[in-house]
Image (cartoon, rainbow over all chains, first blue to last red; front, side, top):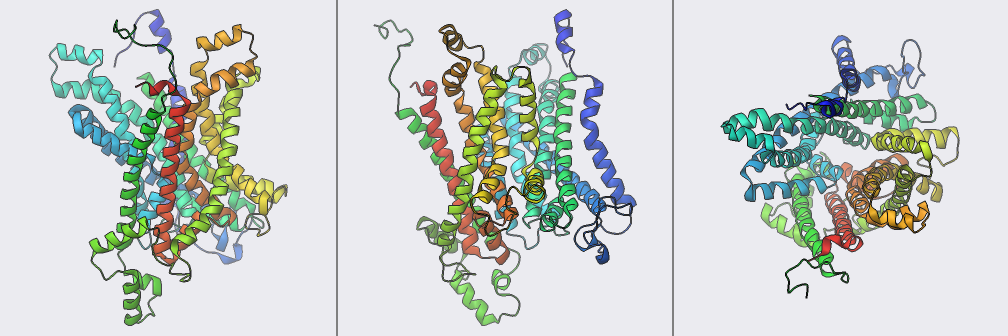
Length: 280
Length: 328
């Protein structure tokens, strides 16, 4: 992309360093790899009951203690974080692809299509997501994880579409695009070399934000009893913690911290992507 | 004179009342469209259920005759378009039939009683959230905190980034279990304190969003000439920020309040479940679990209606507060 030259320009570019970008992206990466290595390398499922250890406090055998029915909290949290992060990232990426394609197309075609799309984005974005999820999930007897993901994609695309439409609209009349056109660049090369890289920046940031929203949304749905059928979700653990708040507060504390950690890591990654876009 | 020379007319004029009303009407129309689409979605989702709804309601012990009777009662034996028209007519008359789990009560009566406690919770937390958020925004731009202004801003960002689902249980554990300042969730005698505590928790994310946007909006006014004029006339910093800058910066705050209502309703569902309070969220979840279709439809549509009304009111208020957009 275009690097400014001259002393003032150099000062302006003296922004984020590589270290700060890595620092912002690392928590999500570590959390994802860590939880998936637990899922892949440990045997047995996360919901194995050992009744005699129900609600036992953190010890060497169970570092984060046990929850209802003697479920190992540490293992359950690792499984839940792994699954929810995978779900969140897939929803965000699918939403990003759908939304960006729709938005950029709308900006190029203009006219009625663009108007309709922006209006549709308005409608989708203005509606309470939780109600929509409740209405749609009521249709399935026992929601599976991909059902929940589909509900989130239903709303996630709109943010990306609006972003892509607004951004490409600005870019079509940007000076460097006009210059490229004046040099005789073809339409596809303008799209590929000038428009897409500039649209991807804001879209990448939005991926992190949407992922954080999905982490919280999935946990909230599971907390109120609309979670995935296999019952492995941080919301389920928070619900158990709320029930056992008096005898075993560690379940509540660790599960609440896990939700904050997972969504915080996604938000931090969004910040890291923002820095990375600014740098490149 | 001005018009004769074809110059732009910058003479001060009285408030134009028609434009904000017209804007609100536009918002109302599109909001109504959303509501119809949403009601249709609810209808289709419940009708296109993979299993037989009468079996879900009655259990697999029920005889075929009982099931047929229930299907007739719910109108399931009519064709889908007929059912849909009946459903829309029922929504217009606010009558979707009786609740299935409490046959003596109409579905909309259940919703009305649940709405009372949810709207109390929502109103108190909107009050807390807007006052607290605006105060935090003012503190983070005004001169009162000195060098700690930056910390205020970081605090706002941290609260805005922390999910309600994470801090509500933690705060409850600290305040209700460790310190015993507030009643335990689910305590039937928790009364006003329980309500205030739940509302305070619900207001935190809202307040943080208000503070974030309010701060950005106030920062835009920071170097404005009219504030310099006020300072030159000897106005105190409280007067400059609260009387002069705040009304100008209020429109984005109202937009945030209106758009956060959806999140507030979602948060209310979670908090009602957590504190075992009666309300719209509890009603929806109970109706979902019991497959009480009339109540589920009525409560989801009622929540949507509530949301739409707030959007329209907010659009109207913004027009009145900031007349700059109203010039014809």
